[in-house]
Image (cartoon, rainbow, N blue to C red; front, side, top):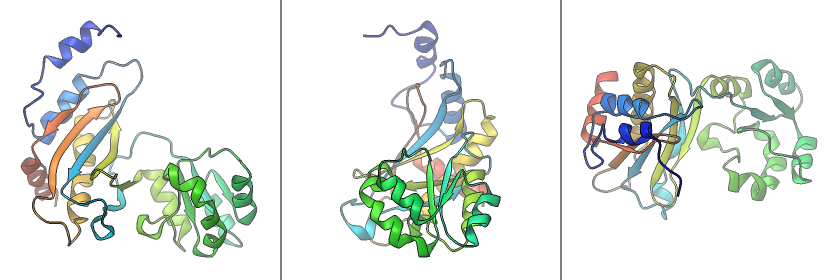
Length: 238
């Protein structure tokens, strides 16, 4: 078992694992408990009151973070014709059409984080479902990654738009920035994500929707956030 550092042990004494904190306090605690030698990411996990086995209760979409994620996002654009130039001008890292899809099918490395496709490319991209799907890279209209306005989509994802969707346990994981961000920036990003998640509540979901919220850095412990205070923060930002 790895020996815990003195900093790590001291940091964990700053908070009560069983306590529920307000979003601002949670952000401060997570930042103070991050002692890795690299700039750790900060992520939020929402545990939702949904039945993830039912299609009408899935939670999926995208949200623009006011201050971005702090991470360079590599975007591939599946486009053809005049949209090739549009995608390149918008900053796509990899641009191509049918030939690119065939290269990926043949084993080309998936060196990108987001895949965006024009609707007319989906007959080719759709064949990559078994490759892109398990990695969460398959373009989808619901997440805004299948769109005729590829230039706008590329620019938004490059600027800090992130995709979210629930896992099979009803949890939604979303990055909200880096430890090096100011607390105010992380709180604003958190508020934008919380607002989006609450708005995305499926009509079929019954009872309490947001059941648990946990914030943590890459290497740090999770800090539980009071769901009622999440709703208060969202209202204050509207």
